[in-house]
Image 1 (cartoon, helix red, strand yellow):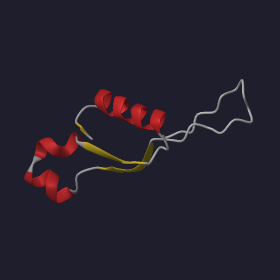
Image 2 (spheres, one colour):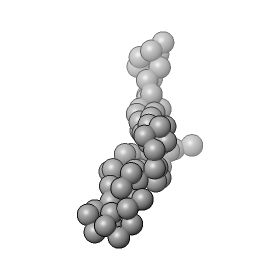
Image 3 (cartoon, helix red, strand yellow):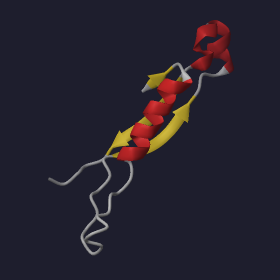
Image 4 (tube, one colour):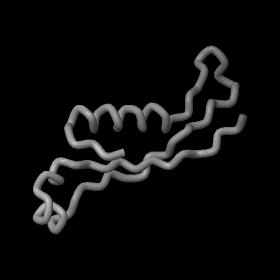
Length: 72
């Protein structure tokens, strides 16, 4: 996902964080946790060459997440 504003980036970051955690049921502590659906990998910002060629790209942030297999 590529975001250009801090508010957009915050939404993306929160979505990835929410879906990249195993969920435990506090009422049944011995039950198996629900597995995560995403695994956060990286945050990529444009390099100096990209910004010099395209100044509007300086605020872009690309967040990368990998989808994991969730057993049905």
